[in-house]
Image (cartoon, rainbow over all chains, first blue to last red; front, side, top):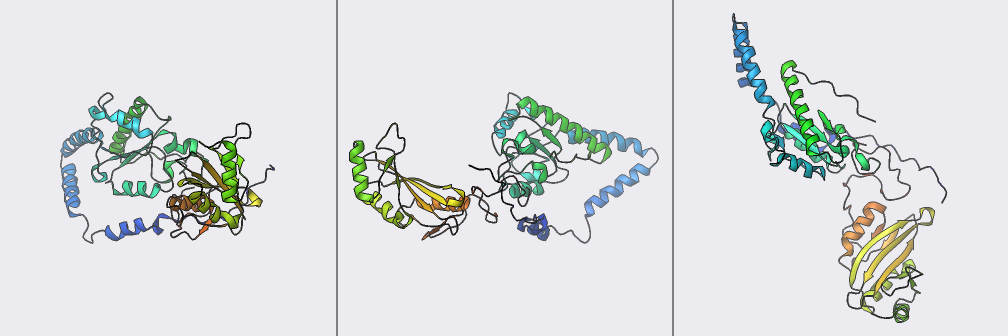
Length: 214
Length: 157
């Protein structure tokens, strides 16, 4: 059989998320209130006044430290398994490896969760649902990409149906390599994530994610 | 279990086409391959179901032969006699139309939808020919050989 170059496919302009129906609904139902968030404003005013009171910074910094520790050590991952990596993720949550001692409780609702562990192959058909779950999580939210498939598409990278890395869909904080990663690897990644969360609470910014590996 | 010669004779009589063993070295009445012309596709399937008793619709798929068109392949089996038939027909590449087996076998409904989904073969007479596995807005048919696999696809590549 002679080898011929594949015929060029017509280039389709990639649709942006604004065109998808999910996001239109999201925008429709999540309009900001014209008066703003009054509760947050009141708290901010209180903290501001306390910080500028003479000696008040002592109290603010020490309580911040306490709050940072609390935030760092109660990261709740949303239970979200896609493929065989989910088996290792379940093993990590279970009693033998027990990430609950780091305060991580797998929670079956994105509204209450801080972390999404993308464990497995993300197909192009699945990606809008994944994006939707990520959008439903409350800020600040974190994402761990677990396994080769979620990192880069893995062995299915050259297939027609797999997203080549979940960082093309959502922002990823920690990549855990492996196919699938052992529970120890995932725990190492989660501890790295805790460091990142602590850094985020101290500096208020995430480190810039590198360009997607290509 | 019919003998090989008896099975071949029955298939030849019922379908009007010469069957061949799937494996020339070890011919087996459970694995016979019959190639029929496109206009006899429905007739042959009906004869296999009614005359040969192949009432079990195993699967339906296609083979892309590039410029020579597609082979539509379906597998029919008789659970009583153990006779297994692989029916094949050649359809042109453009337009890739083939009569649907859905009026004969209910199991063909999803198989033909999948075949349409991945190969782009339009089965005439199918009541509900939509994509089965891929998203509805997918462009192209990925199991065709001229589908450039490792190129960018909407929306994530």
